[in-house]
Image 1 (cartoon, one colour):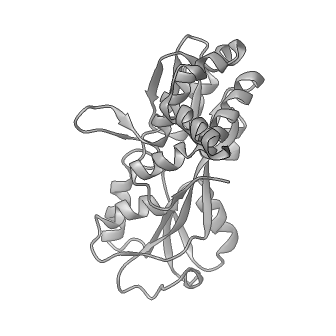
Image 2: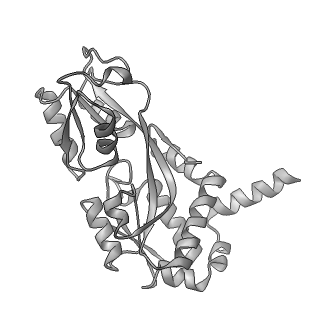
Amino acid sequence: MMWLSRFIVFAVASSGSGAGAQDAPSQARVDLAPTGKLRVALFPLPHIAVRDKDTGDFRGVVVDLNRELAKRLDVPVEFVTVNSNLAAVDQVKNGQADLTFLVGLPVLAAQIDFGAAYIEYETSFLVPANSPIRGLDDIDAPGFRIIVPEKGVAEAKLSQTLKNAKLIGAPIAIGSANRVVEMLRNGEADAYSNLTHLLSLTQAELPGWRIVPGSYMMTVFSIGYPKGRSTGAAYANQFIEEMKKSGFIQQAIEQANLKGAVVPK
């Protein structure tokens, strides 16, 4: 009957029934939703969350996770939109939001704590159709210019591994994708490096461009919360792990059609 017990656990996790709220310790509720609602600092980039054109509501893995967590805590959820990862962290640090979901860069982790990873993305390059680049090993060519998210993990990784190519930083901000497309069209760079999902969106604006097969790193996104809230942190991390094991996050990834995204092990 093991299969039956597993099915029941998955069904409860997926349904968001009221049972989860009863299991949440009162201190966890105080830590995670001190104002009586779960406030999430949301940086609305395509790999995090997108706004539905018809309803105006946000949708995506982060949205699904926080709606489920709010049910477990028996509180409403509120998404506070911000225009940068630094702004999201500031909201959490200053008590204007309770959680955020980002890459735990050192500059961010110095201000808030990051816990369990909830999603990770393949990271590669977008190049023109006639580019001599065929594989990841071809990238480090003299004079080869690569646009990369500024002050992000990809820039840090490529700075360490590439000896000949030149990196051109692009801000991690809403609207920066338009500038990247313009730069590529104008020949200001030879390639663009980012999450595979974001490369696929840029590719749609540049007919004939192609994504280099493979991934030179997995970019990991984690839940972030204020420092010093150990009970809430433990509950939030346990929640993320449960959502990974139950298949909840995998289903959310598929619904959002996130290319190159996988559930961390």
